[in-house]
Image (cartoon, protein in one colour):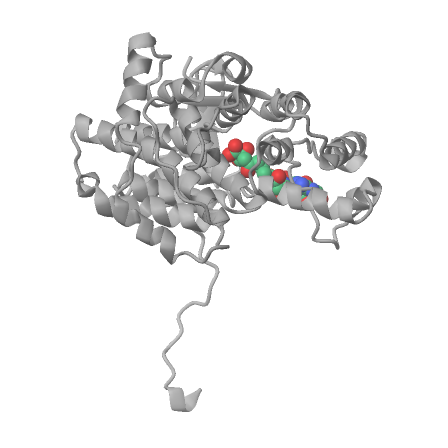
Length: 428
Ligand code: SDX
């Protein structure tokens, strides 16, 4: 059923097409608005603006629904593996055994990085933030794979650059962690699957054989699946718009890493733990900190709470909260900040300020507690978010290219000075 939206400006009425998605979402197509009316729209922060059509991820913020390629996140988190979800996001279908084995095989053949890349690691100060390192290292991959710079890549070349990006991310992330400890890098082992290899390179030692803990491998798979894609969020939109200028995959992913770094986005998982530690140091008075979060004169926000789209529970937060209890119990860890987090959630969800604004825990509220239990330092949390989000960024970048979308170039409304004449320096 095609319906149109009627736009009345002055004494004219314009008819704009309405499009409807497969989940019933509706949009007014304004792609011809300026030609028709001379007007542009204004939507600072794109809160009401669709940038594209996409078949990758669907989320319903009111109902707290998240699906990858039509599969509910709850089922994928429980039954799938991260590498299988990566295949699903990038290729659109769950792989059969042969496809999954070959995908894993191809990736295992490209996990090494050029030895010269170690010189980049040596150049970073030992305590430099891992996200700054990762963004630089990923962009530098384009220097070693010049075929990725070709404006028009064959299907095979595009596929290979995707495989290389996926493969090398685990090595770069684990080596960033090793560098932070001053420990030697551990090289990938092709006998391991994607996540097991990452855990091995991260926690393995050169001095003795490393025994993979299935609890840690399963927890990492679950966390990475939950972070794998989230439709047109800030970092994914950044990857798409950088890719729309025909920038290569490494530069596009590197821009996504930079966008994710911000504490309002992926950086929130680090900010949550820092907030919980601050509350713990301050005596654990959650009521005091809830009051600060509500105080407009206080810059403090309850990190890990609220979301641009979810006006209900973030389904990922529910899964992670449940996993928190299970994993900490299995690892025999009793983390006081988990109890503070639960208390904050309990108090906030009854407080009218949060209820009226529909502020619920998001994916970042509990994830840091698990990462910490697995042995990661706080400033590695957002790098782990980037590792999880990588297949989503790749899938969205690939879809943008398949759509042959034009270079992204938003308009503006100018509000500055008009018609001024140059004044010589001596006369100012
Ligand atoms: C991620 O987009 C995605 O999909 C992102 C993500 C993904 O998977 O890619 O889901 C990952 O980024 C999750 C969000 C992580 N960020 C945080 O946890 C930081 C804390 N949250 C907020 O900064 C905020 O909620 C945002 C940035 C997430 C959303 O901000 P919006 O949509 O721009 O909402 P807003 O800032 O306009 O807030 C609306 C109201 C305001 O109060 P009023 O002006 O109406 O009085 O809610 C208040 C805000 O002050 N508010 C908060 C709050 N979040 C919003 N007040 C206290 N604490 C908070 N956390």
